[in-house]
Image (cartoon, rainbow, N blue to C red; front, side, top):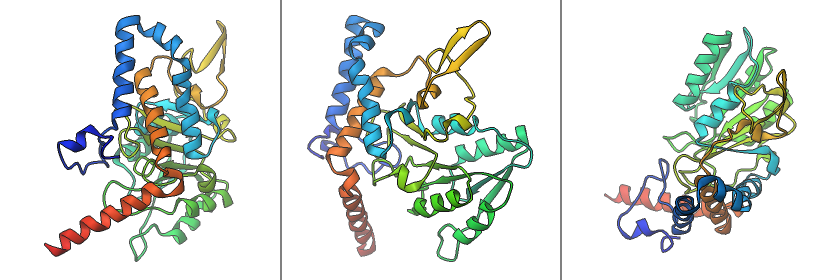
Length: 303
C-alpha cells in the first residue's frame, strides 16, 4: 500500500483521521475524469461513464453490507448527517439521545432542532471506565419521548470506540431509530449496518477510505426511509408529475442533488474497492492499524 501511495515517498504522514494520503490509483482516476471533462464536456462524459459512476453504489453496498438503493453520494459525512437529521420529523418534547463525545457539527444540528422544534437533547454520560454508560442509555431509550439515538462511532480524539452493536440492540428493543456517524471507522474497520441495526449511517471519503475531499456516503435503510421527509429535493431526488405534485425517488438517492462531483464519485468508488481488496471486511486493515498504533505508543514510552 505504501508503494502504491506516491505521497509516502516524501514524508511520514500521520493525519489519516483528518485526510489520508490518496493511493495513486484513486488520484489517477480522479485526474483522468477531470481531463476527460476538459476534452469532451461534463454532460457527455457523465453519459459515457455511467457504469463507473454507478460502481460507487455497488462498492459501498459491499462495504456496509446493505442494498445499493440504500446508499447516497454526498459531499461529506456532515452533509449526510444534516440531510438525515433535518429530515426527521420532530416535535416539542421529542428527545435526541447522544453522547458527550459527539462531533461539534452534529451537536449543532441537535441545538438547531431544539431551537426550531422544541426537541430536547439528552447526553449519555461516560461510565467509570470512560466508555458510554449503557445502563443510562437503556433507561433513556425506554423513555416514551425518545425519538432518535445519535452516536459517533469513533470520536476524533481519545481512541474510544462506542459499541455500536449494543447501542443498536438497545435502540431496536425500544423501537427508537439509531443514527451512526462512522466517519472515523469506515475504512479502518469492518462496519456492518445489519449487525449494528442502524437506520442511518454517514461516512466521509477523505479519511480512512482514502478518497478525495468533498466526497462521502449516506446510508438509509429501506425500512426506515419513508419516515424521513427530505429537507430538500430537486428533479434528481423527485419526479415532478404535474405543476401541483411530485413523487420522491425510491431509495436513498432521493437525498442527492442532480449536480454533484462526478469525478469524486468515481474516485471514491475506486477507493472503496481498494479498501475491500486489502481486506477491510475481514479485519485485515483494522489489525494493521492497531499494530501500528501500538508500535507508535511503545516508541513514545521508550523516549
